[in-house]
Every structure is written in C-alpha cells, then in structure tokens.
Image: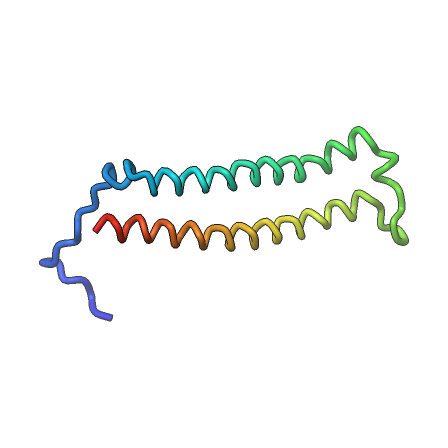
Length: 108
C-alpha cells in the first residue's frame, strides 16, 4: 500500500445534501428506533440490581444453589445481557452500514 499522493484531491462531500435526503433521514429514524429503547432497557436492567437489593433484600438473599443467591445470579446475568445486547447491536448495525453505503453511493 502506497502513501497518499498530496497532489491528488479527495472528493468534497456535501454533507448538507446527504442530510436532506429522505433515505438518510429514514436511516437515522431506524437507528433511533433501536438505540433509544435498547438503551432504556439496558439501563433499567442494570439499575434493577441495586434497586432490588435495597427494596427487596429478602428476595435477593434467597438461596438458589448452595451459597449462591438471587442477587449473585442477577449480577451474573448482567454480563450475559451485555454480551447479548452487543451481539444484537452488531447484527442490526450491519444493516445500517449497508444503508449508509447506499446513501453515499447514490450521492456520487
């Protein structure tokens, strides 16, 4: 791979024109439709542990297996939930990347 030639001009992108396209606005709406609810869900799930420990200590102390109680299981489930959310996000974002490439391609 060679270094970029300073005499070559990079194409100028008119971002205002791209932003005005209905396809671009639709892409932003699709992203918001996923990201906002996913973020709200994850924050509620994440904050549920300290809230439940504070307000329902008897439930959270309940033994599940040996010395492992509901609070430990719930805390461990947050790791799995983070991985699942990341996996889902990557799958969904792949579609956004394809849509973004189409918007950019149609612009040229």
